[in-house]
Every structure is written in C-alpha cells, then in structure tokens.
Amino acid sequence: MTMTENITKSVTDTVDEIAAKSELDKVATQIPARAKLECDLAYRLPTSGRALTNIVITRKQAEEILKELRALPLTFDAYQKAASTTAVAYPGRDSLLGLIYLTAKLNTEAAEAAQKALKAWRDGNTVDPVAIASEIGDVLWYCAETASKLGFDLSEIAQANLTKLADRQKRGVIAGSGDNR
Image (cartoon, rainbow, N blue to C red; front, top):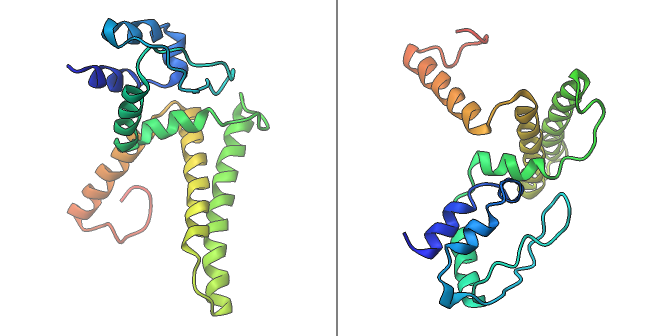
C-alpha cells in the first residue's frame, strides 16, 4: 500500500475520531522518514479550532494527497459526520423535543424548496435551480441530523429505502399509496 493510500484510508474516519483515538501519530509514522518535513496544512478541528497536527510531509506530497481526497466521492456517511460538526445547540437537543424540532425543520426546509418552485410557476418566471438546490442541501442537513439523533447512518436509511422501492416495483405497487403496500 502506498503512502497516499495509507493516508487516504486513515482519513475515512472523521478528524475528531482520529484525534480522539490518538491515531494522528500512527498516520505520521506511516510516512517514510526521508519525506518528513514539517508542513502545516492549516486544518483545524471543528470543535476546538486547534491545529490538527503538524503532519510531517512535503508540501508537494500534501497537495497530491489533498487532490486525491477531493476527487473521492462524498458518501452519505461522510456527509453525515461532517454535517454533525456544524450542529449548534437547538431546542431540546438531548430530548424528544430535539427530535420534534429536527423533523419540523426538515419539513420547513422542504416547504421552502417547494415554495420557490411554486412562486416561479405562479409568477410565470423560470425556476432558479441553484436556490432550490440550496434548500435541498438544508433538507439533507436536517435528514442527517435526524438520522444521527435516531442512531442511524444515512447510508443505512438510503439502502433500506432503495430495497423498499425495488420490492414495491417488483410487486407492482410503487404507484400506490400507504406505508405498508
């Protein structure tokens, strides 16, 4: 396994998880000694703002690694972990009220997306896809935070949904109504 593959594999965990597991030193030891040169990549932990580490690689190596990482597809679970770092205190965060708040906001953001399309239709204007995409992003954030609150990974929910839809399609009831069809 190459140095880049080792580091790419290591960063699949979130920055906070890596820091919490004290694996930063382990990652640094996977870098060949001849390549060790202090390189502050200016990455900060989202929770504390402290520098991630002084990983010792050359600037060129860092740029190559970052280029490869940016080219990787963003998974549901990676998004969910990253999105959770932006969650601020909200009403009842650690109680049932928090779940109610999240699901209500999820509905509100979905309504905002629909409202943008409805207003364009009503006024005879063209739809602003960027504005609607922004609202979809907000919906996705609330989906991720709600899933986290319930103890699910977004990938689990997505896979279960695809399985359910494929089963309904196979049975010819995809166009029906009701949860248990």
